[in-house]
Amino acid sequence: MISIEEALSLVKSKSHPLLKDTTLAIEKSGGYIINKDVFSPINMPPFRQSAMDGYALHLHNSLSYHLVDEVKAGDNHQPILNKGEAVRIFTGAAVPDTANGVVMQEKVITNGAELVIEKQLPENYNIRAIGEQVKKGDLALAKGTKLTPAAIGYLASLGITHVSVYKKPTIAIVTTGNELIEAGQELSYGKIYESNSKMLQNALYNLKFYDITIHKVEDDYEKTLSKLKEVISENDLVIISGGISVGDYDFVGKALQELHVEEHFYKVKQKPGKPLFFGTKNHVVVFALPGNPAASLTCFYMYVYITLQKMMDRDDLELPRIQAKSTNGFTKFGDRPQFLKAIYNHGKVTILEGQSSAMLQTYALSNALVFLPDNISKINIDDLVDVILLPN
Ligand code: AMP
Ligand code: MG
Image (spheres, rainbow, N blue to C red):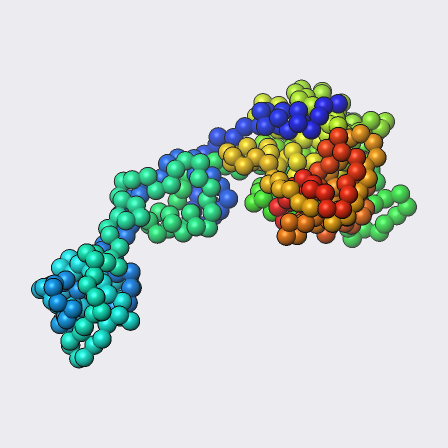
């Protein structure tokens, strides 16, 4: 059994960017990482642009100007201004080459075609220079930049329609267990509704991974073997739920061994989620998560999350951690470090009831996990504790 720290560092070192390029329309690229430097095809702004509704002036020594024309946003005519002349202008409109200052309309007194400004303007005041944001041919966004809404808007403003990124992984979720039935079926004696596949699928959707297939196998060695062989050959990431414990009908470990999946660890000193397996076969990453639903989800957030980030070449590998004051107490039994379902709110955190690894009821209300290391067995009210923020 290895420690959480060892397990985290093995997941980090054994997971790699997928390095499969794809080109996407920018509107479909949210959450991806740019994998080639993007250079600007244009100057932005492409012309001298007015930053205000007001008047463009050909500056001179007096505060009085004579109005000669008008330029609206989108107009492409260029009035010629002599010294002391002005044109009416609006935000985003092209400032004539012969104007060298724009004054806000609120700072002008007009009388017909004559206008008076309050004070002298600095040269090129309220005029956005050509290429002020980025110049044609210069780096617009560097390799490694995450495509956020702002980044996509910026690329759109440069007239860029497509962007090169690393592909997202294709992911298989495999549930195991003879006791599992689908919602909609009658709940007969000894059966429970299968929940982990929908839960993990949604955790993946939340992180913007959509290329997911779901598979179910019974607790049967041959069936487990052939299903795992199939999904490992067809996916980048395989997430197995259940069947990895020490019961007589847990066949996942034996099947992974038979398929030559290299084991990096099995069993982590933590609660919940002790029976956690992590391995790889060539570039394919395989996790076998414990079947207990809360343990499964916590292992997803703590470990599978890192692989997903690595595969995308993102550098924020773990969920954000902060410290917060606990509003209640908690006593830990046993010596394993523990992840506790909790609600974080404005610097304070409340540890919830129902910490069993089988229970999702309070997980459904959680937005955080409190981490209790092995050297702390008791949390008192107002103690500062480690909080992992969940991406809900
Ligand atoms: P296992 O890891 O296969 O020993 O399963 C541990 C516990 O989790 C058992 O009570 C299972 O019934 C339950 N379990 C396993 N897989 C699922 C699942 N996909 N949905 C809901 N409960 C599950
Ligand atoms: Mg089972």
